[in-house]
Image 1: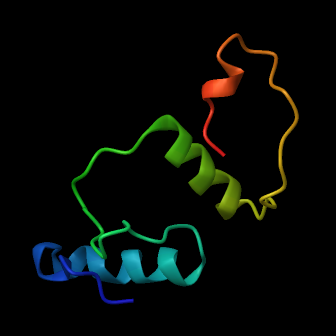
Image 2: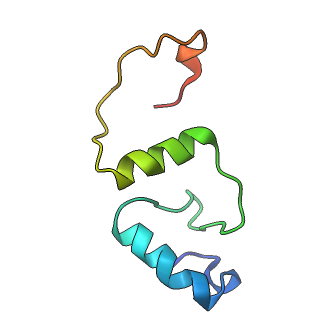
Length: 73
């Protein structure tokens, strides 16, 4: 996948980015960029870890946390 901001990422990062995209761990951003130096949320990191571990996208049950309704799908 060619990201709109590919030129901003160094050659050293491009292979690793391509590998994680091919593995289905990351998809990039909705605007077609990757945002190599962008911040990610805990929820985004949790999703990447789950994908790397081969976890399904199945709906999870209630977490028991007070802010359960605020946890993104």
